[in-house]
Length: 214
Image 1 (spheres, one colour):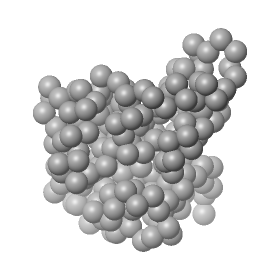
Image 2 (cartoon, helix red, strand yellow; image 1 turned 135 degrees about the vertical axis):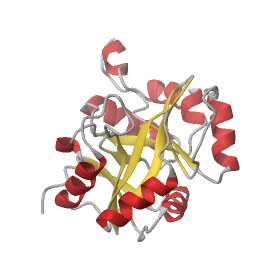
Image 3 (cartoon, rainbow, N blue to C red; image 1 turned 135 degrees about the horizontal axis):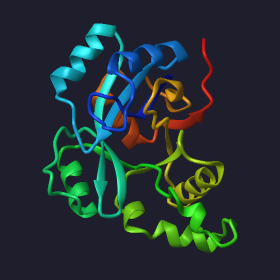
Image 4 (tube, rainbow, N blue to C red; image 1 turned 60 degrees about the vertical axis):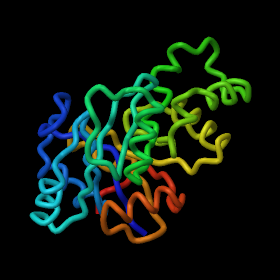
């Protein structure tokens, strides 16, 4: 089993981040994670920098990005660059597939609760949301996000089930206090980026939350 936080941001790549990469890794170790993915907003770390951070701490660090598309934000892994003018969800999926990567809808229904008339999650609502282009063009959905409320998480879980998707977890941490509050538990040992992408494509994982300090 390998516990990885798939969704984090740092001061080195996201203007909204307020932890340094070294702080992220040290906190991830402290809470019992086996690895972290750095997913800056619309920005990819150079691979040599990711590998340097991993070697420095003798710890699993994987690079990705949280890419803004015309349908919402997606986490991408297995691809190391995207042209700045590429935001169409279909084109992003095409580029990710060409690179042999994987694409996950990040907090896919953020803010929807505030626009809901009753707050009821009906089969009709789930069916309608499952048809959204964002959901149709990703490999997976983030069902546990550390910055999302219970209603949004339930809805994401229901839509993932409707789409026969497994559902991932990530803290969406911008500071150290949230690192590991949501994560993804892989059934296999993940040692590198290639292994992460393969495990995600194989569906060999579950989303988890409330990781406690060791």
